[in-house]
Image (cartoon, rainbow over the protein chains, first blue to last red):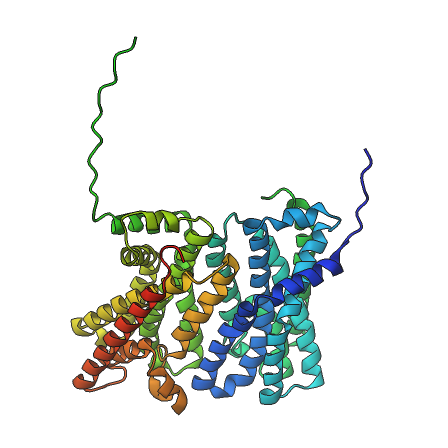
Length: 251
Length: 259
């Protein structure tokens, strides 16, 4: 029996656009995507206004990180509730294109609220070209890690109700607890390597160093950059492997 | 030919008073199978507390702990929303509940009880922290006020949760709608800080939300934002009036049987 050869990422563009359209119909989700960020920014604006620039940049990075939760919910919803993954993957769409297409679709839909946050940051805190470049790279690393992780985690659950508590713990624990919305200097010094090793806080540290809110040695910059890249690409590659391995027979 | 079977008398089961124990078991089974469902309500207020502890004046900390208790109780409404919507949309269990002798009010209290169980450890830990960090709080009076306020918020926000749940159409909507309804109400009211630090128009808007009176009453009772006794009584009355009104509206909006 002939076995069709599979082109990697086949169907990526079509599925990305499909997912983008699906996501754009979820206006409630899009509107509510900045809630945690806005709440924390309000806390800062009310109680420690001078930290607002740090919190605003942190809000952008947290938004990219929280996209992982959206991917997680979407992948789980499509698989558990609608069982649509069977239909999608019965066609020529490859598992890795399914995962990446979903992540890109979610990213596309949520760029608008994140863009609003970027605009507010530029107006309130200003943004140099260096900061903008570092922010862009940091956002890419955080998004790659979070979306891959979200997709991976979604495959581990059998019902939607169980996912929410775990998602809430993970994204709030790693997005709010470490120094993302507040300066790296507030974080206990002995635990600095931990903060520089976690994707959201590593990204935040790099951005804070460009706006003068964190002083990092070259070694620390290298450590945070390497951690972000290794974790982002590593998780991405692992999730491609995982998607190929599990997506067809997991339900 | 086999002998006729002896006529078995069906065992007598109590037909009333079973709703709360049944939902209590449901709540316990849920957390015993999914411990994360208990960790999440504990974690969220603690994460906010940690963040506020870093950025806010240290003198606000006891107030923030009380705020975390109020927020945790409010957030039960979010979990009620999630459960009620999941049971209706995914498990189609609501038809069974509607067909039972249980009315919608007992369903509300039952589901609120089942969701109080995962939140209870968080409330206990926060109470311990408050007693530890604020020696002045070690008197019975403020705790009785706090208990009363928590009960009112618990019923009120569970009613809001159940009302919203009947309007949710898909599983995908539950999480964002719950976040919108409960996080915004919870965070924009002065639970974690004194009302006086908010800008004027914001302060004014807060007076339309029951949680504001809950916060003011408890903060006053513990002496974090001192107020005369008459003012505290006024806050208590306003909280009760608003809570009863909103609960009645929520139950009215709640679609129990067929639309």
